[in-house]
Structures are given as structure tokens and as C-alpha cells.
Image (cartoon, rainbow, N blue to C red; front, side):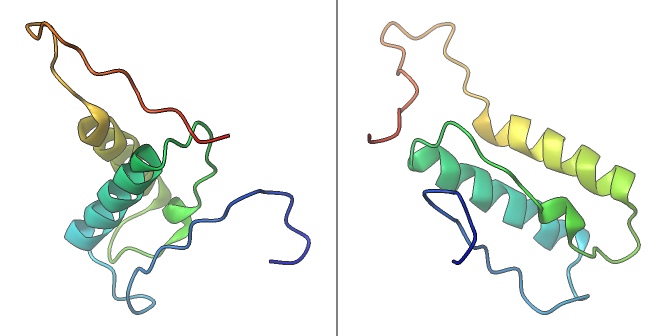
Length: 91
């Protein structure tokens, strides 16, 4: 993409504009977080909160994005003997 200083860009398909509901919004956030985690990304800028979600305001969208990201990345490993290390990006 021209005039972009990023090394990589992740484009997310979100369906038809103005038809996104609460459930779909959370799924988009989950899939995005999983993809970023699987690629070992250490930094990301997210504009998914700019999407139109039926009947919801910006406060709700940001709150759901944060809560969904936290839930998606949570891994209970206190009782595990072999804890997995977070994946790092390829150089």
C-alpha cells in the first residue's frame, strides 16, 4: 500500500457495511487477536472500533474490544509444569 510505513498490514473482512451486529463484532475481534498472536506480532494498531455496530456506541465498542482481546489471550497455566512461552515474530 502506498504511503504506509508499516512492514505488514493485516486486512480483516467484516461483511457488509452497517450490517455488523454484536456477536459478529466480537468474532471479528477474536479472529484478529488470534491471527496477530499466531503470527507473533508484538505491536499492532487496530481500527476495528471504527466499525458501525448496530445499536452500539463507541464506548461499548472499545470496551468489548478490550474485554474480548483479554479473554482471547488468557491462558491459565499456574498449574502447568511446562509453561509455553509467547511466540516472537520472525526477524
